[in-house]
Amino acid sequence: MRLRILHDNEVALEVKNGAVVCSISEISRLLQVDRDTVRKTIRKHSIEPAGLRKKHPIYTLSVVARKVINNHFW
Image (cartoon, rainbow, N blue to C red; front, side, top):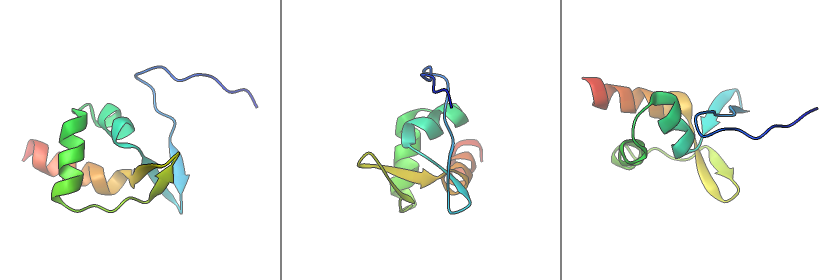
């Protein structure tokens, strides 16, 4: 298997227990919203991390995206 370095605008998706999980930075890149918007949404809705990656929390993409999109566009 060949590994390559990801650029700033790329995300490597990770699946955990059948769900895509991402860091706050990855979610912000995917949804094209500011990191602070994602962070504040997670805090506002008390979304629990799905786990840790290198001591940093990762979140279920579908859960966070649904909340960010609902707050951002409606």
